Amino acid sequence: MSEAKHVSVHLGKRQTLPVSDVAEPYVSVTDVKHYIYCPRLVYFDRVLHAQPVFGSQQEESQELHEEYVRKELRRKDAVYYSPEFVGAEKYLFVQLVSQKFQLQGIIDCIVKTVKGEYVPIEYKNMNSD
Image (cartoon, rainbow, N blue to C red):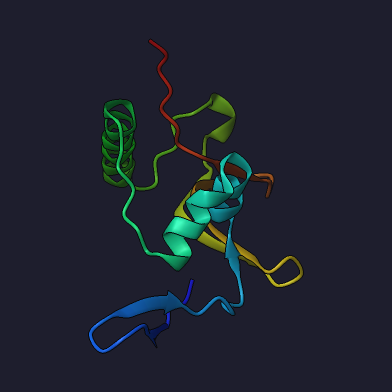
């Protein structure tokens, strides 16, 4: 997504409030996911630029995701998911944009099989207590 543009709204002699440019051309897929869960998340992030406070499970999941990404980067072109992927190509962190739907997002991994089929892979870590 393009960098957010900020406009200062003057509230008084010493107060200003940063406001993001809501006319950004594309919406991220993550924003859609967050909006479905809780519309306020998008408002806090995109308008107020508030930093989220993560719980211990969210922090642990983020660390596990980052570790998996580091391992995947070390593996380079190797694809270990299934025997049917022998000889497949692997693309990491591919940005996709839909002009039709005005959406953009990044896929963790796309595997292109020898038959020319594209398989998207999203790395997730879920644990329940």
